[in-house]
Amino acid sequence: MLTPILENRPTAPRALFVDLNNSNVFPALAVGYLAAVLRRSDYQVEVLSPLSQGVPGVSRDLADTWKDHLMRRVYFSTHPMVVRFHDEMRRIYARGAGKPHPKLLGELDRILRDRKPDVILVSAYLDHRPSVEAIGARAATAGIPVLLGGPVFNHPRIAEEWRDIPGVTAIFGGEAEEDLPAICDDLIAGRSPLAEGIVREGRPLLAPRLATLDDLPIPDFSDFPWELYKSRVLTVMTGRGCEWGRCAFCSDVITANGRGFRSRPLDRVLEELAQQSRAYDTRNTFFLDIKLNSDLQMWRGLIDNYQRVLPGGKWVGVVHVAARGENGLDRDALHAAKAAGLTRVSFGLESGSEVLNRRMGKGTSIPRTVEFLEDAKAAGLSVRTTMMLGFPGETEDDVWQSAAFLDQYGHLLDRVRISRFKAIPGTRFERLHTRFPDRYRDLEDFRWRYGEGRADYRYRPALAAGYRKAKARVLNQVFDINRKPLEDDAAMFNGLM
Image (cartoon, rainbow, N blue to C red):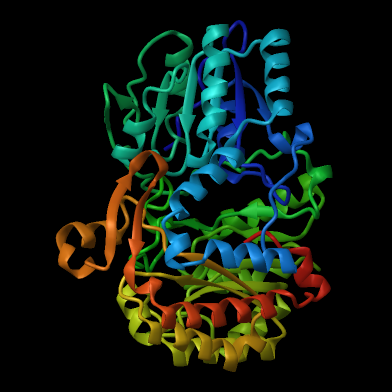
C-alpha cells in the first residue's frame, strides 16, 4: 500500500522538482506520479522543466537529412584511425549536451530567492551530471536538502560514483511512490532517511520493487508546459518491466521500475485514460511500456476498449515479436488494433542475423518478424524498429544479413533507430562477461565506467575492411528508410519512441 496522507501541517512543506529530461513531446511520467504522491500527502509542489524556460527540447526519429546521415557515419565509423578517438569524442559531446542551460539555472535562482522550497528533488539521467552539480551547489548555498533520483541509481556501483556530489543530500534508487513523502519529511527535518534504497555511507541498500501496481495514483501533469508540446499526447504505462526480460543488452529491465514484470488492472488503466483525457484535452496516448503485449489480457483489453473510452483517439506503443507461443500480434489482432486507434508500433529487430539474435537472447525469429511486418503493413500500421551494430560476436556476415533484410523488407518500415552496442552495468551481458570472459576476447581494452553507466572498449572485428563495407551498406539503407515522409497520423507521434 502507498504511504497514507500525512497529518495536516501548520504550513505545508514545499517541494521543488527539477526535471532534467527535456522532452519536447510529452511530460515525464515518473515526475507526474511523484508529484501526485506528494500532493496527496499535503505537500506544495512546483515542477521546473527546461522546456518551460525556453530551453530547446530533444526530438528523435525526425526525417533524416544529409547532415544526419553524415553524423551517423562518423558516429558508427570503425576505421582504425577514428575508433581510437570514439570514447573521448563521446565524452566531449556528452559534456556539452549535459551542461546546465543558463535559462534553467536562472529560473532556479529566482525560485530559491523568491519562494524558497524546503526540499529539492532532481530527476536525472547519467548525462545530466554537470546540471546536477550546478543544482547541488546552489542548494548547498541556500541550505536546502537535495534528493537525487533517476532510473539507474538502483545500481550500487553507479550510485556510489554519484554519492559525493556536493550539495546532494541523498540518492534514492528504486520506485519511490511508497517512500517519497517520508523521505522528504526526514530530509526537511535534518534526519537521515530510513527508507531502503537510500545510499548510506557508500553502501546503497536495494529498495524492494513494488509488489503491486494496483494503488498507483493517477499522474499529475498539471505543471508541464502542454502548450509547448508538438502535439498533446498522454503518457500511460499499463505495467512495469518486461514479460520476456532476457535480452542480454537490455538495460530497461534493470532500471528502478523495470525490475520484474507487473501489470496494472485494466479498469485502472481505462479510468486513467478517461480522467487524463478530460484534464489535458487529448484522446491520443503513448503507452510507455517496455513491451505493451507483455500481458495479453491487457493488450486485448486496450484493443477492445480504447475507442469506447476515448472515441476517435489514436495510440502508439512498443511490442515484442516473440518467436514462440501467442504474442497477440497475428493479422486479425493487428487489424483490430488499427480499428481501435493503434497508429504506430515499434519493435526491436536488432539484427537480420538469426544467429546473432539468438546470441542476444532476443526470443525472436526472422520468419515471424517478417510475418509481423507484412501483417502490420496490411493493417495500415506505421512500423518503427530498432537495430544494433557491434554486439559482441557479430561478424561481417551478420552485418551483411542485416543489409539483406533491409533490402528485402525495408519498404515495410517507416523509421529505423540504429545504435552501437553499449555495455551497461547490471545487464545480462555484464554477468556473462564476468562469468565467461573468454567468450569476449574481441572486446579489447575493456573498462567499466560506472559513473557513466557504460564501458569503454574496442570491438576488434569491426575494424576489418569487410565489416566496414557491410556496415556502410546498412547505414545507407537506414538513411533511405528514414528519409521517407510519414502519414499524418504517424507523423503526429513521431519522436516519441
